[in-house]
Length: 477
Ligand code: GDP
Image (cartoon, rainbow, N blue to C red; front, side, top):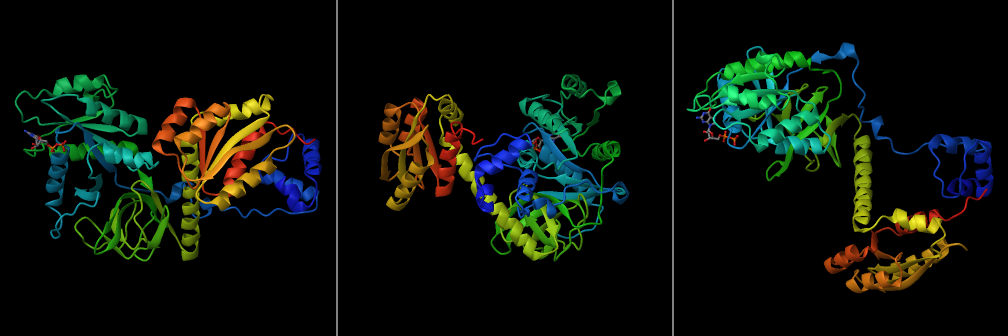
């Protein structure tokens, strides 16, 4: 319909052409770009794709083989509470960093690297699976290896199992650290036995999982643990291309009173430098300062290196990807696009949340001819928009199905509105424009299966109602 309108021809003419090509369509059919381009050509027009394409700037295609270089592993420590996750991280840090360069008090920035012999290891230092899941929830895969800490005197506990499941689900290999072996009653083999039932059969028993016995408190076999991590790393063949614009993931971010938004970024490929324009979610900015967890300034951050940066215009979310662009104009366009898309998503999910029953069955009823009239109640923040909606709705219908506004008023959606909708017909809708349903109304709606839809853009409301009626509108051809 829109395409026909743009070209100044009848929708039926376009539908006819589509039919010649074997496609049934009506005025509401959505055409993809290629089909619209083809159709436009038939009528002597050309179509230009001006839709925003984020992949133009955020390239997620893998780097060519020859550019890849090995990178340090990114490790997360997980396990049941009190089994020694924090102690183990401290033990590793003090046993490895002590030999390194002195200076700077360690700050919590969410991640750090330690030098273990010739090798570097990156630790995400928020132990437990909260951080791990938070990152994963946003689609970020930041961890290469999970260290599962199990206290030898306690055994496999609920959070141990949870951690195993998280690691499994993410496809991340697990190294088991049996901790507290200094304690009386410590029985490492019992742990091995128990974990074997969770697909973690020890290598020494013919399985694939590497186990180490340690005492975080007494600093026993910490170097053994580090060696085991490196052993597992060799199996993983972790590589990335350091010679490109940086990309990675936000590990943590907060608003610092003195420094403004501060974010810890884990570089996953490319090299990050001060002055780079970083985009993450709805924010961007030029990297002003870059430092490690000891507040030592860092000149470049390469793959697997975490750095704390300032300069972003807002606080990005943990788990959000970040990437570097060369042109500030692009950064502005991208973030603008993200902001708009999020607004739309939010609205859509709010509308979905409040629709107690599926709108599909409403459409189905209309399609079946069971419904000749869609009854709606309109509530809005101002009279003007209520009137506008009422007016627009009256135009949407056709001979077969009509929209009938049974009530309209200024104000929030109340129990009364829901009652009215429920009692008037099983198929009435309550529409809120810039207003929401109060808790009682919400409850009633759920109880009676009344559908409440809320909008803040008139066009969206019209579009939605039109969509519901769509099942009914006969094809034009
Ligand atoms: P988290 O909750 O997993 O981070 O566990 P913590 O690191 O806080 O440790 C919990 C308790 O166990 C603390 O009191 C530690 O001192 C103690 N602990 C940790 N590792 C060991 C160990 O190897 N041996 C002994 N005896 N106690 C330990």
